[in-house]
Image (tube, rainbow, N blue to C red; front, side, top):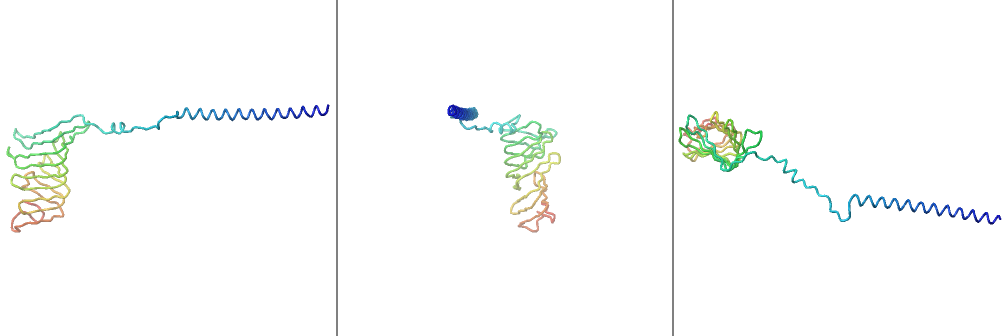
Length: 217
């Protein structure tokens, strides 16, 4: 009988151990299934990598003009007499801005209806209210009598009828050359004043081409 009891206890202990092992196996299988299911939901087999296209968003950030005019033409006159004529390959007008963007600038100046000089540049802006014009990029002013001004930017004050800047300028009249920083002049280049760092190469030193202040007449 003692042997019988001993054998039953041993069998009972074995059954408990086997049950525990079985439960552990079930738990492991369940955990593996959950992990596998989660991986499938996160990224299906064969799914391509996520690619975010930001080009459209970036394009939306670039403001588009509300008005575009090709072969733009603007005439300023006083008492019916032309003062200047502005031409540009393309004018772009943007919302909330008084200035219009100009792609290429060709500006002809007139005195009493007669043409006397031309300003050209790569780019510019025109204030559509004041008609002030700012130009930049290979700016050149040439008068009908051969005077020439070369610079990188130039501002035309329509009210004062003056051109000015604060960058390097090169003024040529015949064989005479004046260079310096900063300028104020009339569009016909009859009056031109170089502000500072003036250097002059004047062929006829007795001429009144330049006074000591850097003003050419």
